[in-house]
Amino acid sequence: MSIWKRDRDSDLEHELRAGRPVPRPEVTEEIADRVRPRSGFMRGLDRVPLGVAGVLSTAVVVAVIALGGASSTLDAAGNALNFQNAAKGKKDVNTAEFNQYGPRVFICINAQATVRVAGSVADFLISGGVATSGKCPTPPGKIRGDKDGDGVLDKDDNCKKFYNPGQENADGDKRGDVCDRFENDPNRT
Amino acid sequence: MSKIRRGLTHRDPLRDPAPLIRRVYAYVAYRIGDGADAEDLTGETFARAVRYRESYDASKGTPINWLIGIARRCVDESFSRPRPGSDPPDREAPGDLEFDAVERLTMSAAVSRLNDRERELIALRYGADLSARQIAERLDLSTTAVDVALHRARARLRELLKAGRDARDKPM
Image (tube, rainbow over all chains, first blue to last red; front, side, top):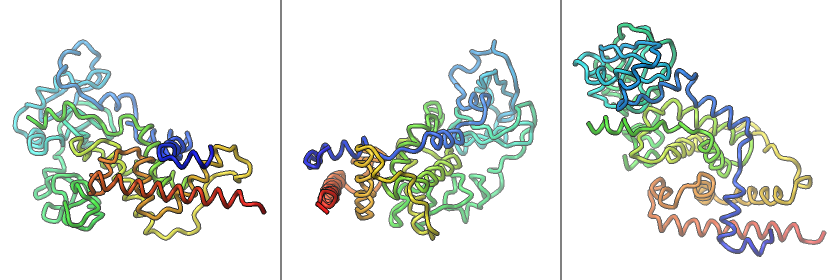
């Protein structure tokens, strides 16, 4: 390509886009692997379709989880068959969590691992374990004075409703990065 | 109720990671240079994204916007860290490369000679492929200001490329 062609703005833009640096394929794959949920079962739990809950009742039930004090059955793909019953359940510990924090619902597996829901009531990210029935442990969020359950008490927490145990705060203002829209501007939050 | 509705339409921001990885890498590479350091920082960006994926809020922006915010912080932090002899980019000598690759190297070299602000703009626009409007929101500027600044950055880039070409073509 001649230098004369580069003198045109659109050609330079094209070159900048077309010639943008690319990572090595193995690096892309390695990072993608770390980002993806760990197994097919876990990936299945990535999305729980509330609207179709119950429809898949003929599917193979592989597990039962305790959620909101009620039992939910999961089929092979990880769809919660009676999830709606759990979500609208009694005002027990977990239902209270759901009502208070919206996306942050705690479910439990084997009564040992507390599992956070990723992003919303419909999206699950299971951190490990095989789902069976069990009694839920107290979710971290129930610790008095620590709404988001990140181990930092509300009075000292720079994002009271967001889980940020590291309290990252790039601009040093009163809000942490995860709840600061202008995370690099100390004058705006 | 609105939270439930939001939940129903929510998507994991890292659901399709490969294109996001490429865009984040291109952004980082335009900021700090192509090579191992850029790969490390891209990895670090996604490690943080995984840690905080629950806090992603689709109403505040697209997944790439969110990731670029994390990447910017990683890059800024890397600048403030002492760098004990960082690895040179994994590239062959220019003389052994095809013509296009030489052009790309020249482009990389030219981008690396821009000032921080210009590099940031070029990286956001052509590396991360954000729109001028998205950049404006991120940098808290008007869209017009971003367009003007980008125009200036491109003009400077053209000057650098031309100077590089002139120096190369000069008879020994």
